[in-house]
Amino acid sequence: MAPKWRELADKLAVRIRRGDYTPGQRLPHIRELVDAGEGSKATVNAAYKALETEGLVTSTRGHGTVVREQVPLKRLGIARYDKVKWRDGDDVAFIADRVASGRSYRRNEQTQTVNLVKAPPVVAAAHGLPVDAEVYARARLVKEGEQPTHTLTSYYRPEHVQGTRLVDPTPGPAGRGGGFKVLYDAGYEIDHMKEELTARAPTPEELKLLQLPPGEPVVELHRTTYTASGMVIEFAIGVHAASRFAWEYDFKVPDSAKDGKEQE
Image (cartoon, rainbow, N blue to C red; front, top):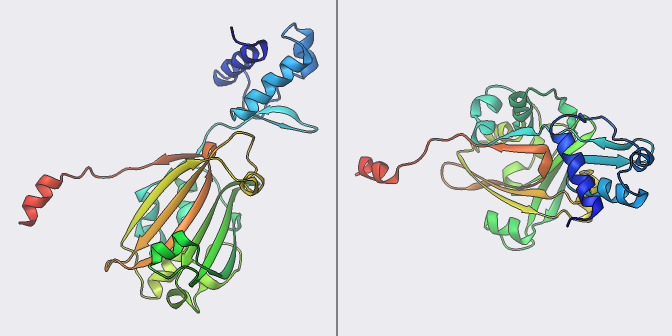
């Protein structure tokens, strides 16, 4: 037998998912549900806390318990790096996601800080550098309106980016076409990438920075970017609020047996 607060939380969750309560709408005050016979104040409070932990609502002082927006931002896979977007146009990756999702954007929704730092072990390994070798760290916080969506920190070898806009801490993308266009203009054309995704619990700092509700996980992205010769030109670590993204990949299915015969 489920506890009373769990039964109430499940009943409210069903109503939220079928649209009885819409995004941005405030749920009834705790006293209203108590008076309606849904349980004690402690029961209703526990049910609301459970809904918040499950990412269905947010609770703030002065605004009560409000249904969260459940439509995630489309996070493109291969298509977000199409060269025509940044080499020939001005759609940097986060803007490409917004365009594909039919969402508005402002270029200043990406802030950044740039520092010369000692490479963390994972960064040093990706670049083939000794641990604690100096690298440039270009850290960005990306927002949609006032809501943070993710962080992304790109690490570069100094000899690849010294004197370029990638070491300029001016807020916003690094000029027209963003970072990949800067690398392209410097003679480092990106050719292929590897992305690794890991779901985990957020750190206390990430909870605050991304304004996450209690219980929401994050998706950590490791992106390694190569030139055609196999040189690593960028290694990036991103931390994404899990409920704010839907990851989309569209690619040709390989046939290694066929491809091997064609190469003979």
